[in-house]
Image (cartoon, rainbow over all chains, first blue to last red; front, top):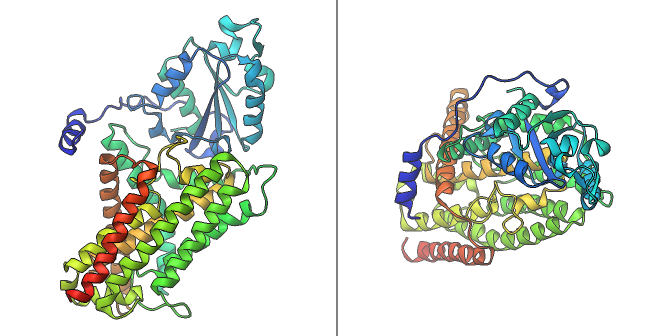
Amino acid sequence: MSLGRLARLIIRSGRAAEPAAPAPALLEGAGVFGGSVQVRFINVGGCNDCAMEVASAFGPVYDVERYGVRLVASPRHADVLLITGAVTQNMVQPLLRTLDATPFPRFVIAVGDCAITGGVFSGGYGIAGLVSDFVNIDLEVPGTPPEPDQIVQALRRMTGR
Amino acid sequence: MVALVQVVLFVAVAPVLVGVIRQVKARLEGRAGAGIWQPWRDLRKLLRKDPVRAQDSSWMLRAGPVALLVSSLVLCVLLPLVGTLPVPLIPSDLFVIVAVMLVGVVALALVGLDAGTAFGGMGSSRHMTVAALVEPTLLLSVYALSVPAGSSTLALIVQTRLFSPAIIISPVSLLALVALSIAVMAETGRLPVDNPSTHLEVTMLHEAMVLEASGRDLAWLELGSWLKLAALLGLLSNLMVPWGVLTDFSLPGVAFGVVTVVVKVLLLGVVLSVGETFLAKVRLFRVPELLAGSFTLAFLAVTASYLVA
């Protein structure tokens, strides 16, 4: 794309982010983060529905980054683990290793019904258990999949902004 | 005294500069942006966390980030940012500055290698490749600028440009400044050499090396690289627009110098972020071509300074 066309596109599209909703109450204990939360996203065996909703929560329209949330590439940088799906046999080890590598204080958010109850996957032969069997969940975001808005609200309870 | 002011000022300004760069980029992308104070919040949060270090990592993971931070702080002392007054003990000589910068570069590369992960090693090797290509350009381009000043002390170069502004728009100086700008972008890991906001394996340079750092290690690494970015942008802006730089010590002069250098650095940050919005990252194997191009410009500048002037 030429520079001129890109410049016109930027001017024409203006601001894509939707107006911010009032901030929800800060989750107890999340005050240590002081308005800066780094998120590591893990899909431990879902259908990628929730992953798409998480991706759009971080997109320009919902723009959860404006509340001080950022998606990071390493669990060592993370304060919050965002987990979707029911834990499959193959993801047990990666999940445990990710938990090991995440520094304290940390919080765990389970996104979607599969992560909370197992959903349609519960009892499947490839399922090793629920997320709550391996780690203490601090916040649940129910839905199959949940709206990006709900994910944004859950993350805002971490930053308090 | 001025050196102390410079250090304190740049520690305060560097996160804000990064915040401004991210905010401008967010606005251009149609986002709302996290605000210019977000990097400060990130740092504060990182310092409150317990670092988790890989089992096989050594003392390097602890010492490396501090070494990078210290090298950046020394850079803030030596460079003529607020004023061109000489620092006692260490000359703000071109070679001293490049050497101090290299200490930070090597420390960062060792931190990347330390945990023994694939990404860290890959990032370090790329980082050293870029560093090896950038340092000669840095040396040569500043050398070209030093010819009219008759000294390789950066403070004197800025002072000469302040007193005879005609030098600034001479072809030699323009060539050298273009070469220096490309070298600084490569050195500080900005587009088109490295993408500071990416987490994609094929594109990571800086991000790949800091993957294994956490808590305060990560805080020092981030602050160290932000400081380097701010200091080098400050140097660039003072070479381009030397007005407002303090030459004789006086308190109102210091205040004026502080204000002008902050304005210059932040303005250059805005220009940088707008430019980055329009740029794509260059393919890794073409980075040497880009850097060789900037080296050629620097070489031409040096040649021209003897032929033209």
